[in-house]
Amino acid sequence: MALSKNKVYKKIGESGDTVSHPVQASTTIYQGAIVCFDSSGYITTAAATSGYRPAGIAAEYCDNSSGSAGDKEVKVEKGFGVYYATASAVQSHVGVPVYATADDTFTVSSGNSGCFGVIDKVVSGTAWYIRINRVLK
Image 1 (cartoon, rainbow, N blue to C red):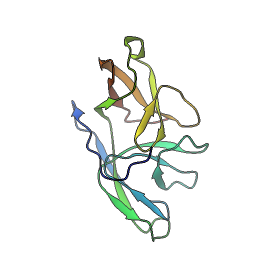
Image 2: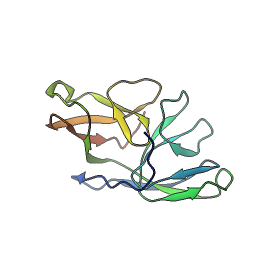
Image 3: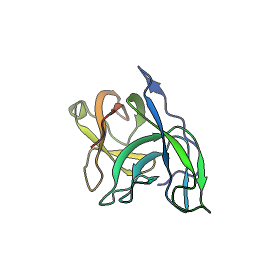
């Protein structure tokens, strides 16, 4: 399910790297959204779409819904840890790569999206601690 408002993740550990990137046309990015580079190199909301490459987590809201590609930029963070609520978290998930299927959804199933990070810890039966990679593949 796509975000319809800003989301704040509980960050853990070191602060990450923040870089501004141009946003795809007709796109709204909410703070806290999981974002990707599309096949043209512009930031868009994460999806299990062939050609999308992981970028990180949006550090701010950006409304380019009426703009052309690159008219606006959004700050994107990576290289930090977040707590993430999930339907089911088990100890065997530790060390497993995580992927994105939507701007608010991480999964352990690769699908078409690249790896955003790894699960560092199972916090409970419904929460992971995810380390968002500095170098995303």
